[in-house]
Amino acid sequence: RKFTGDDDAGEGTSSSRPRESVFTNDPHLPGNQLTAADRLLISVYGDTIHDNDGLHLSGGIEDDEIWQQYWLDLTALPNQRYDVPSGSVGRRFLFALADILDGVVERRWNAERFIVFMAVILQRQKGVKSYHDVRQRMEHRMDLWEKGDHRMLVEDTIKVNKRHQPIGQQNESAEHIR
Image 1 (cartoon, rainbow, N blue to C red):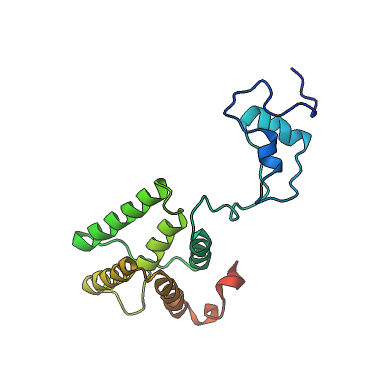
Image 2: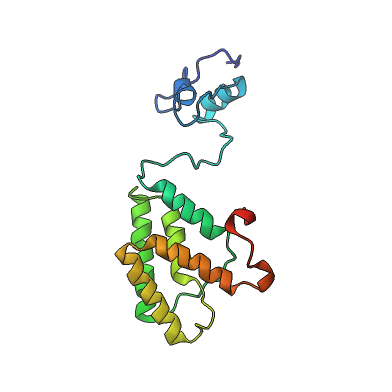
């Protein structure tokens, strides 16, 4: 069957594929107009190419915008993280990380939370180098995470990271790096 661009997307296809109205009536993309190529992609693959970063999609997660901002602020920083220690602190970190990943799978929160947790718990601090001090720092930060002090941890991670950078890079903000 030849595609003319006037065909109804989804005609003759499985009912599990989205109809064209799904793409033209999307409240997150007002004014979205499908082209003949879009209709063909939808008829074959059930979707089309999206010219956006997907940040407008919350996936039903209430505080998704907050976590996206935390993620953006932290991923703009240089990666200066401790390795996960062995022993009880390492196990606690990994169990907490697994719980967060379970929450992502169960749609309690989005994946940004997973990345933010690793960044704020494992962030290096100048002068904290001994095995004991690193473990103590990580335990304290995990206690704060469990209390819900996420914003404070993000702000502290950004501040500590700036202090940890060479002097010439300290004035660059996360906005400038993006």
